[in-house]
Amino acid sequence: MINIAIDGPSGAGKSTIAKAVAKKKGYIYVDTGALYRSIGLWVARKGIAKDDKGSVIAELGNITLELKYVEGTQRVYLNGEDVSDDIRTPEISMYASAVSAIPEVRAFLLDLQRDMAKKHNVIMDGRDIGTVILPDATVKFFMTASPEGRARRRHKELLEKGIDTSYEDVLADMIERDKNDSTRDIAPAIAAEDAIHFDNSAEGIEQSVSEMIEIIDKVIEAKK
Image 1 (tube, rainbow, N blue to C red):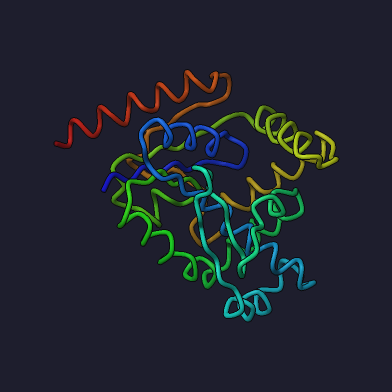
Image 2: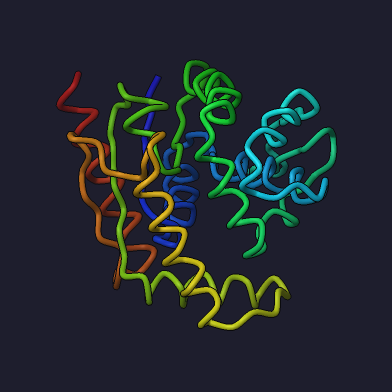
């Protein structure tokens, strides 16, 4: 199977590029962040503080997650409920960052992610895909962009979804999440040693997609 890993900070454009590449290549796109966000949503709904590790771990046995593809789009189901839109708020982003630092949460999701990669050609994006989830991925990317550029992109996405928030709040949350994700002890958001660094600061989507596909095709051909 062909497995493509795309890591990088929040708002770098990983999901947008990964979805487009997956569509053109005929691969399955796996948004791993949606899984952590779903656990964060469950915890938030239960009124549990995001830093209450013991209570978060205790809830894992009450959670079932499924990824389904509806008209070619990934939807995530939390205990049978489609929460694909509910998990995209700034509050749940912070919950996702907190719960993803808990080893038991990562172990809970590890098999689900790896099982998909064993059965399908996938493009998987997240924070530690190339370092932990798929260390033997066919191609690994680490996508970057400036915090300001990422915040503008995320702010626009939130407004388009009807979520009223300020650019300044999105930028502050993003900087805080970057710090949390890159400095945590468990699976920090850092580039794999063999990852290809991909700067997505100013590129247009189509150009970035074309460049990534060109790199993927070259690596696959070289490995034949």
